[in-house]
Length: 321
Ligand code: NAP
Image 1: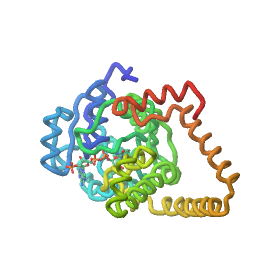
Image 2 (image 1 turned 60 degrees about the vertical axis):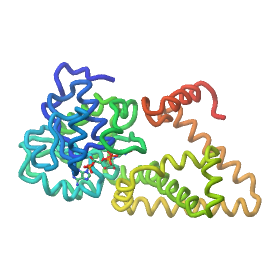
Image 3 (image 1 turned 135 degrees about the vertical axis):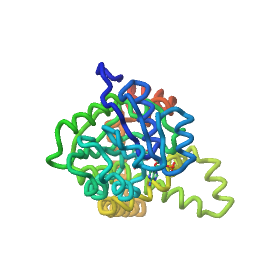
Image 4 (image 1 turned 90 degrees about the horizontal axis):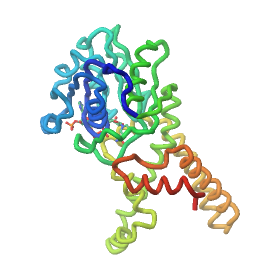
C-alpha cells in the first residue's frame, strides 16, 4: 500500500527513539513522502550519529526538546519504561495542535505516564503496531515491516476525531489495518497473544541454559525440532520486554494464572494416560492455527523473512498438516 494522498500527511514528524519500530516508520515515511521533514531524539550519541549516517532523519539530537518544537506529530518509539521521563520533557515545548502518539506494546501505562505532561491543545493518540522482529536499533528497521498487519489505536474518550483520523491515515499509508479500542482491552488481548508467549519462550530457553553442559550442547545441535522457534522469540530485546512485563503486570498475571491451570490439566492427562483429552486439545489448537493462516497473519513480515512468506503461500493452498 502506498500513500494515495497527493500531499504529505504531515509537515514534520519527530521520533523519540529510532530503533526497530521508529526507524522502520521513518524509512516508510521517507520512501513514500508521507512527511516533508523527519527529526528525532535518541538517548546515545552513537545512535544519533548512526541515524544521520543512514539518512533516515533530516535532523537527529540527544535532547528531546531540540527535536520536537516544530513537529506536527511526535511519535514516541522508546521502551515503555522510559515514558514518564520522556513525557516530562514534552511539557511546554510542543506546538498548539501538535499530536503525540506512540508505538508502545502496553497502552494503559503509556496513557498514565505521558498524558498528564501534555499541555492543553496538544492531542494524544496512543497506538501499537502489531509488527516486529527480534532485532533492535536503527539498522534493523525496514519500510515493509508494517505491511498487512494490524495497528491498534487507544485514544482516550473525548480526544479529537480529527487527530485520531490523522494518525490512522499515517498507519494505513504504512500498509496497516487500523482498529480503535480501550487501552485496558488492548492490554488484556496482548497479554495473551504476545506477552504470555514471550514469557513462555524466555522460560523454556532459560531452562535449557540451566542444563548441564553436555545436554545443553545437544539441545542446541538438535534445536530444529521446536526449540529453535522459541529461541527466536527469546532473543527479543531485554529492556523492551522487562518494561512490558512491569507495565502490564495485572493482565499478564491473570493470563499466567489461567495458563498454569491449563498446564496442570495437561500434566494430569499425561500422567493418567488420558489420550482423548490430549487429542481433543491438539485438534482445537490446530484449528486456531488454521484461522491465523486464513486471516493472513501467519508470516512475521514480508521482507525480513522471505522463506516464511513462501511457506505462508503454501499453507494457504493446502489444509494444515
Ligand atoms: P529498540 O530497537 O530497542 O530502540 C529503542 C530506541 O529508543 C533507541 O533509539 C533508543 O536510543 C531509544 N531510547 C531508549 N530510551 C530512551 C530515552 N529515555 N529517551 C529517548 N530515546 C530513548 O526498540 P523497538 O523495538 O523499536 O521498540 C520501541 C517501542 O516499540 C517499545 O515501546 C516497544 O514496546 C514497541 N514495540 C516493539 C515491537 C518489537 O517487535 N520490537 C513491536 C511493536 C511495538 P539509544 O539507541 O540511543 O539507546
